[in-house]
Length: 234
Image 1 (cartoon, rainbow, N blue to C red):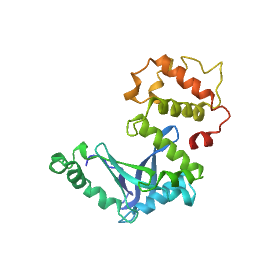
Image 2: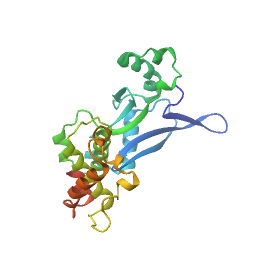
Image 3: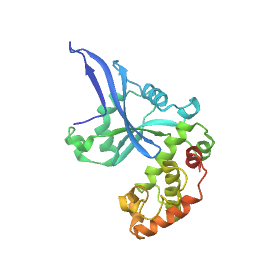
Image 4: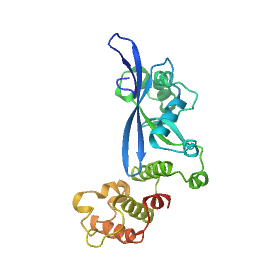
């Protein structure tokens, strides 16, 4: 593969001394790519990386249990079990792509950019919504909110126009605080081309930018007084 998110750093004598792992999170309203550094070892278990990410994000022990490390490609996502070695999985990745996507290129050209993947630290697949809603850990709620927002905007969570407006209004509350009638007027979003950060592309063309903005601002007003924490919980 031409570019993988786990690399070994060598000292001046050519000896391996550190492992760097690049991991993406959907942290609230932003996408964040972070790099963790570990002492060199022949194996790097997913559990070690999850522990590092949980500490970096400030999660509680309860919150950490709700998250996992994922290997993500445009056509495939695999959750990594805690006891598995990341180096071994990286070598096997082209075979996983061929097995689950039936791509000939994955095996025939292992150095192709098609085989590239990223690590994402996000919600455990088997965690139910009820369990997630009982979590009171603020750092974990920020991650869950960010993931949900990303899934809506990319169309992975198809939703109604009313749901889109509600999520956009909550996003406004988390980003800008309480509604300000002198500041948050028509044009606040549309004039800066920011609406695409609030409206999924499959819904965007159904209304004019001004109409979308009016509906979002009307809903946004109803969330005044809600903290960032509470807005993400809703």
